[in-house]
Image 1: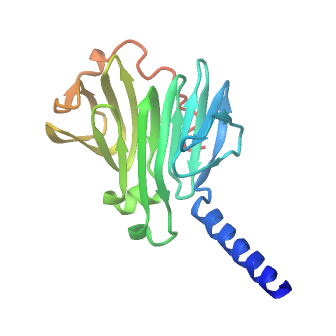
Image 2: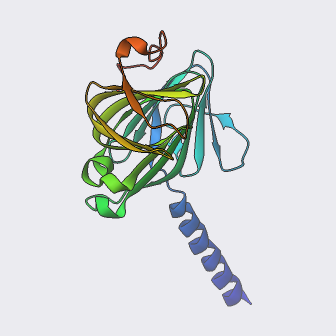
Amino acid sequence: MAILRGFLQLTLLCWGLAMGSAWAAGGYISEMSGKVTVAVGQSAPRSAAINTPLLSNMTINTAEKSHAVLKFDDGQMVTLRDNSSFHISEYRYVPKHEEQSSIVFSMLQGGMRFVTGLIGKHNRAAFSLSTPTATIGIRGTEVMIVTINGTTYMQVVSGSISVTNAAGTAVFGVGETIAVTSASSLASAIPASALPAGAFANIPVTSIGG
């Protein structure tokens, strides 16, 4: 009986370690202010703190006058402005084997700034970022994104992006400002002066790259 009990305990320990690795952190919250919450799957949101681990199937929310900076293992960075919701559908990084890595992010609401890490730089197909109106592919890119009154606005700081939805795919380069008015309208370049006032004003810039 003692042998059987020992075997069962060892089996449970191994199972627990396997589950732990499946939910292993892919990064952490490196900076934040105000009220920031995180929730994994259908679990209740809980207050976040600096160094809170980032997990697959996690949603990060920022409240009024709040922001958060997310750092991932491959160097990918995301800065969330206030009143934003960001979902990590999948994050898998295999160092020195970017072809085996993958990123699937969703910007559910609000605004954010992205800086591509090693995965996006070396394996373009491995990176996907969905917004309410389109899916964005980036490579070696820094881009600001915000959704206002149902329209998604983007500004490419460096590199290039592809923007895909039911209307097709459009590609934009550094310095371009883009608008996607709906999930069935093709993304188009617009003058920066056509942006809503203060569109990117509340996205902290100084944290990126730090």
